[in-house]
Length: 83
Image 1 (cartoon, rainbow, N blue to C red):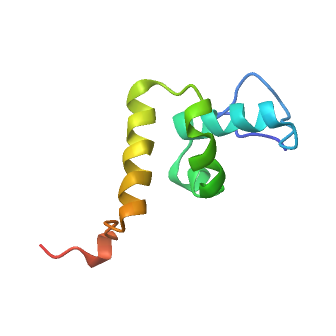
Image 2: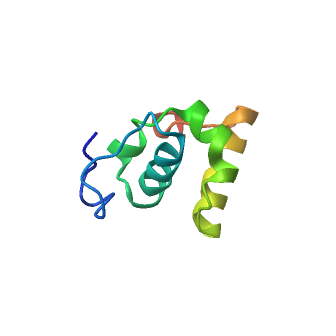
């Protein structure tokens, strides 16, 4: 696959069948990707590999919190919020 330049600027192609490249690309998307890019990830895979991605602490904490809330069923969609 050809990654978007704002996500990966050091490679022209990424082989997502290679486990190392897939993890590296996932890290890049979680760090630099836009919502549209992040939404294309396989969430089950991201949850399983989160500890292996070597994310910056604040980014890792953000995703850990997101998955913890989602697991607990406390995920509130924006349209469901009452103000």
